[in-house]
Length: 180
Image (tube, rainbow, N blue to C red; front, side, top):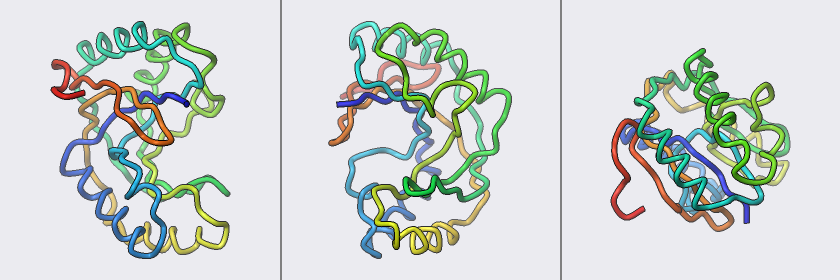
């Protein structure tokens, strides 16, 4: 199973994303609402990971990184893959991503291509695993999200997915989250 390192949204912003997930679910677009995922921005995905070393690196980065302000400003589409909310890209976000990959590079196999520095498109997934004819429905529902959403990225963690399983997390600038 692949592994992802994710930055979780603050509770208020996450609630706004979950509301959209529920509206999509009511329309029969169910993956995100039922996935067990938290609203997040993914820093990278790997097919293999040295778990102990990766957890240590993520914990250290979480301890050293303060919450990141972010504005979810538009709706985007990866054709044939996903509908998402896109943040305004800032130097702070790009630097965090690049620094993470420098630090994390040797802790697993190669990161998936579209998550590497220079090709990464930061996004918060609203819908994925769609039949091609459902993209229009997902976009129409996503267009109702009241943008912009001012948020903060407040936690970093490692998940294993399909199914989604939170392996560990750390509050940014804080301690390990209880129960993860």
